[in-house]
Image (tube, rainbow, N blue to C red; front, side, top):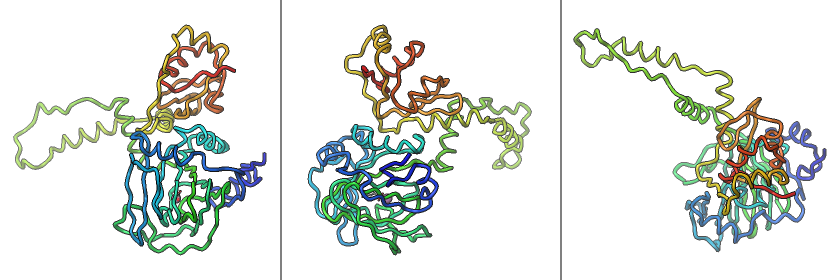
Length: 362
Ligand code: SIN
Ligand code: CO
């Protein structure tokens, strides 16, 4: 199927020819697109403590970054307000993210929206993940350089390339899409006041996975026995760690084992866990259990935009919890909207009370 957002390429063609290989510019990918958020909505989000935002300003060669929450209703020249996770708060940004449903949900990170004054940008840099840059209102010039070992500027609050030598320049107008593979140098400067949406991809790094997996093992339970040495002899060199203690440590650590099932359970929980600043909203006047079960017979269940629901093999994960995948849960996870059988009413009720899902009468 040809996708307009990919310039008439099918998802397969795009993935084969461009994905993690070369940039793609699609003129008029989303005709009439203005930016998935208004300036007023961005300003309101930036003022919230549960929303990640920053204000970046360039003065000559110096960069200034202020982290949110921010009171910012007007922008000075050469400055940009960037708001992350806009898809968690605005339905239009959530729809935009879901428009990239030809990619696995576990790989989609968030929609960041930047509102830039003329001359605004975040400087030449590279990102370690793929990004789709969708131009809303206003125009922005992108300069690009293919990946290499860039020299970075030291001592600035931003990650900036010191020796940026762009080999391509692109003028993005409203509705245009620029796809950039990881590690491409890029610098986007607003020609006039503009809005740009970045659909960022999630690509966990080994270290990040390993650290989280060690936490998972810890929570699951690690060997508990304490070292004992009833036949301890008098110490001759007091600083020397006893050999027996070293052998005990090696034996205890060597007993920590995990299976493929454990790594899969960990991965699903990890990838579906909400980011630390995510707050779910409980229903204002919640239905009782019986009324919910009755309504479930006629109403579709719709996942809240903050909910991440994934499946892997026989497991289903929702916001960091795990349970056995059933066909109905798989359908809900894939489509984010489904009719659920009565057998799942108890699970669904708990998720409804937690704000993970809502009921929508057909
Ligand atoms: C921006 O929208 O100003 C920056 C987006 C990016 O370079 O990744
Ligand atoms: Co970037």
